[in-house]
Length: 312
Length: 312
Image: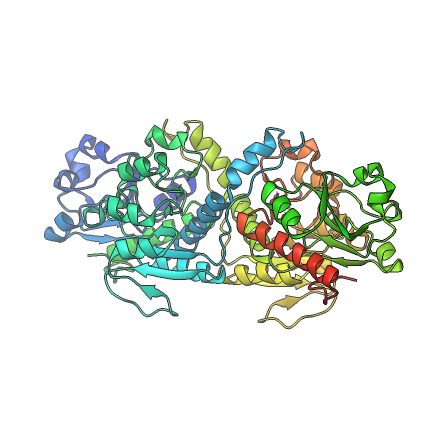
């Protein structure tokens, strides 16, 4: 018997779909695996993972017949893929289906931050307009100089949208890519020095930790804005907070934070920071597509077919 | 002697620029014209108008040598151009320089409304994320069916941006235009029935009053969203409010209202409405460009050169 273990915050529809398709046990958190009877653990051949905490050797030790970890989400930095690979465990993710939503959010964060729309809405709701006030002037965004750090699938979607706003698009990635005339910078500090807004679209994980460093933030300068829709870890958050508080950075639009969901309270005192609760892919349509792709990977594994979106 | 009368809420920089260039008197409101001594009124040959109230026969009667009303803003519905034309008074506006800003705001209102970003930000700031909650799922926007009512300069800028979001673009205007494959609808009700989001980019004034009618709103339907960056008058606001309250319209993103700035308080009770205090062109860069274009029109008039942007 081959059991699927689904771990994480699945909603009702997702849970029902999993249970309809598979012999499936759903756990809220990865630390509940240890509580399962040994005879159950030994039947688990695949995990559907939607957790936020690390899934590594400790969990894999408990599941001796595990062959697949199918991650829900494009970012699989919570999963220790090196250990998985060493044990012959395959890992899949759910790329592409969420690119549009995440890019849409990046553009929204940029517009909201630069045009001060959250502040202007709050100001209006407080009665300031009705009592004769005029909200101050914000900053023109179309036509600006913008940079994308990490020109993968999502970074490219962001850049495509920025081009329609007549922006001068610059980017940094490991290697130069074929683009419609966008300017490549081999060094992220050079990129930051050339633009006013930095869109962070890196993959997460140890290799990109603090990639948007204190030096990059300093190069962006006091008119600079950081938009991060990747992982909190990709930006040196302490350096960003220091720069924001000192006025050495103009603002930020952030969907991701180092210590989610209990984020650094310093963010709440900064009116020039737009804060979102990691909702990059949080639409009905996209989450359904992600859940379906995860199930398709589980199904492929169980039937011996090629995995749709393997990452190792 | 030829005096310029600047009327409206000019900021310090604009006022200084006007006074440096012209023999200029600045009034806060159009109803202060009557309080000027007759010998001053008789020297006024041009008005720089930045007012929000009507400027018509009553004001023109008080300025017998008036030859130009140079409006600050692309929308000049506050000025009675018919009466002006009958008296040989020219009117200019400030088109084009604000197109990008207004289109940027339209896209922002669409994204904020559909992705519930103001609500999610407020929810996060209230501590709901930190205490373990998950914000609900919003609606996917890229790739949707969208309609633009009024494909003038601003409407086209909006549509160009929407195309980069892979939207299926439909539009309605007085006549079919040359477009990159966008779908024309001769009837605004047909347009509304074909799309989920309606971007209103009409000119203001009596001819477009209530143009987005109760019938148009009904055709848009319960998944429909209205984004209005034109004038409050272009939408049947009472019908829109009724539909929003009844759940017969999904939401709205509004920069303009019928009774600005003292807008209908019913709007404040609708969480699915994003409210902005008429900030379409409210950026430092664009307002400077608008003020400069107004001064250029005044200068052209005084020197007998061709007006740059006449509307009558």
